[in-house]
Length: 591
Image (cartoon, rainbow, N blue to C red; front, side, top):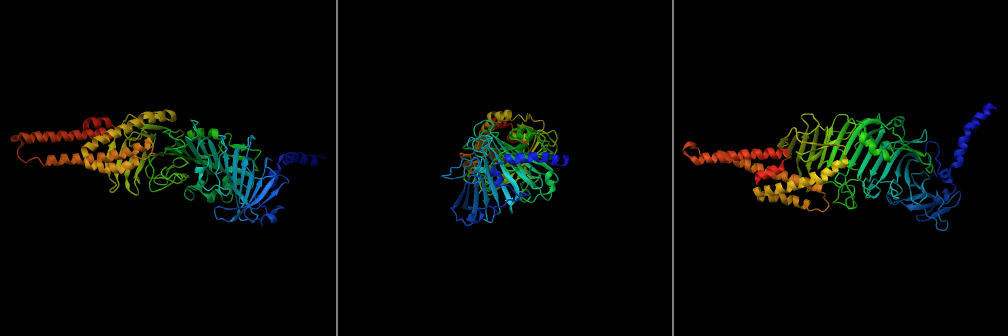
């Protein structure tokens, strides 16, 4: 009796589970290994002969539609099977909806499933709370995208032909929301974190626009940086066959971006300018990462850091290396923004690191290199800290030892130069700025300022934003404009030619105050270069052109010599004030 009793006890949970399984889940149940084919369905023979626009309505074991559609990608036929999971389909006018119905796509009409899109209305309010689309390769489940409607607006993914094609601009990147990818383990029939897991958006001021975005890159901790430096973004990897190393997943990279100037709005969406890029082999183990959804088709438990924990994890991630990015302006030679807004070139993902100079694995792309400031810290840090430097009037990564800003592609294909920053004293603050000539690679000028009165902000983002937007940025613009006006008085025609280049960019309605400041910075720097060339050169010439007679017998020679030398001293004082960023002192001296 004991030999029969034990197997019966073990089998009871399976019976209970089967009784709770809905008809809709049984209909779409996969074979072992995640195999999903529909050529054994009793309606298959008739369905495969349908023409585009024709359909079959089924009522048992529940309402379903099988219809033939045209695929927009290649105009070929595809068979779509719609299952009415929640039982609200009108039998007199059967149509699928997007609250709790499921769509199965067979692209080749060969009985092998290619995609499945499932909407889940957990609270029964007739709009979806979750959404997933599964990717079957040769009929075998490989991975899936998931979406959580955390702001309850009913919007998550915008799909074409029942799949995501990479244009999330028309999806839900604009308020509180989260998407993530999981890899299917066909051996254990379970989900594993992989690739972008998650992409989380946060509307912190409740205006319907995202103010921060964080992306976690999940990959095997043992991945090869040489063979797969961008593993988490490689379709070959996340959509390829399963292998054992996938069970040891880590959060290998976090990209964490901010709308510091607070301009995110319907007119200025995706308005991120500051971001961190963090790397380390951190095991993917977080409280609450297992999310079980009873209305999901098996497997029902997904793996992802909860939306409510994402910012906390990003703020405290134990990074081995940190990259800091500030988007100063667009790159006129490349278009990476919303296709329908060519003059507004911002990404939905936030601001990216680069694949040049300091390589950080799993960074992703596409990448803008010109007019984007990069700063790099090659030491461990478990907190994000920034400071404001009065020298260049900018926000910097505390602890960064180097940085660079490639300037150019503002008006077209031209390259203007580069600004490099260094911490030569290793105290956590930049103290050397090199302004590099594009043609020679030699610094046009160097600012070496130690013990500057830097302002530390740590990770107090609210205090930083208030200071930057209400004090630092307006003051920088005011001083730029005032100093530019003084230089124009000194330079005349040369200044007008330079100003004419920047005027169309400064007149664009869509640029932000921060972008305006960048353009004014460049214009001011160009004017200052011309000013130095003019007056240093003039002083040199005047000193050399003094008459060669004995000054003792010509009072005018002595007076002129003294005047010219005092002018040289004044130029040195102007240079010293300009080097420290004390533009008001420069203005006062010029006046």
